[in-house]
Length: 314
Length: 277
Image (cartoon, rainbow over all chains, first blue to last red; front, side, top):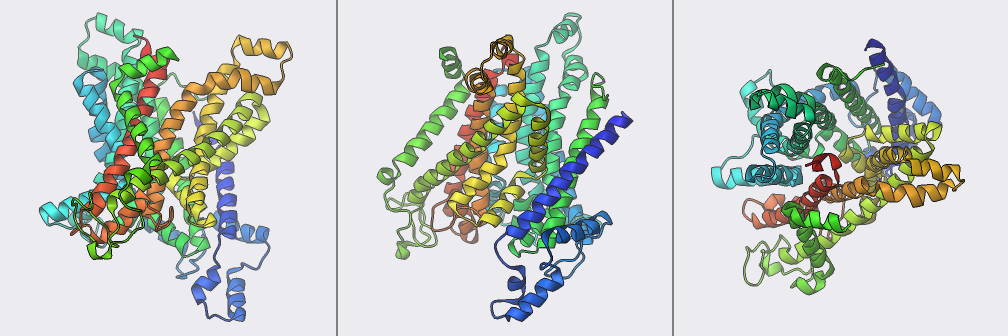
């Protein structure tokens, strides 16, 4: 097990190296001159050149990459080209916002999705199953931005309520924080729930058709025992896979939801940085996001072993 | 094939999806006939008017007919969806076939590159590519196509490895059939089931991504009618002109919903494990 984890962690290195090279090159070919964006259209060529030199943009590409990477490896992600603020502390503080949002969304999604998926599988081809399939597909089909807009609209028109503007941290004022987070979390939780519900239904269904379930039933086990002790446990791997992918994606920044609700999360940071051509911020945050994404997937892989002892990690 | 259509016909959910998709395709093709106005025609005196006999679904802030814009928006969504998935599926098919058939080092190289792309959340990757290429209809298609390539590659590769184990492939290799012929004549037709399911699901994903990019102002550019773009533009007026938000939302959700209905149903039909009964 230990060797497996170490090997998997080592396998992350080339992926993250690939991501770093890719995002570095992409930022170098992106149209729009950061110096021009900062200094404006009436800047003199000398001033532009000076600024490019200050940022090290005049150096050969491999030197620029080496300089950036040697910083990253010592946890120095550099400074924002626009604000001069240190990038890593900014990424980490925004990550806490995204993390909280992901956590609440995921909880909402699982509480709805897993029981519904199980019920649908138990009553395959019934009206309940049909209903669950339609609801879950609607959940997947509703784009985040559309659901968010409709919820804001309904709240405004029916309840004369508008979601609070501006972000307050959980430890500053927990109630205010939850009031800010709950609607974005419902929006994200709904689309997550759809996918988890579908996966729960199909994987429980697959297990319920297997011979060992028939044997357990023939022995007179209660349906509750069949479902929770046997079927669900065996059906957990695909469900966990999809949960892992979703959590990884959400932690990587719920770009649209954060944008709509003005939440200062990681997604908003990247979007603003791309629009402002702030290379250093984009590079740093994309690398961080990729790191979190592969890490979450690694954790899920490790979790498989606890759920299904048949999986060996040799 | 006949059995497949029979099963699809029996599965009401999938059938509903298929009918819905055909309807959207019909609307997109016959948009100039169905739409009462041009999507860009401005009736400034009627700006932000509610649904009426003259403007079936109301008008937007420039006095453009929302019904006509939604009808033409179907063209944009389908066009972007089909071409983007076409790009992703073709690249994925090529890379997946090569990786799965030759395995070894070639497989390692292709799959590690795909892993790098997998490490990016979809929307972020699409955003970055569009930022590099510049926002336009064509670039949106290319961006979404690239985003979808890794998932197609992975699915095709997995299917190829499964099919390659069959004896008829071993025999074909033994009698000296060229790898090109084996891959295209014997392997490709046998991996079509998961490939088609993924195409259907990717179409809904592509339409959703296009709408999201356009909503962020980075996809299809105004005045082209894009459902996502329409929603973004209407946010300012939504409280006193809710029709500007509601109808484009319904169009997006129903279209994606139909593709998902069909994809879900195809997956159930083509999955032998779920059809043991």
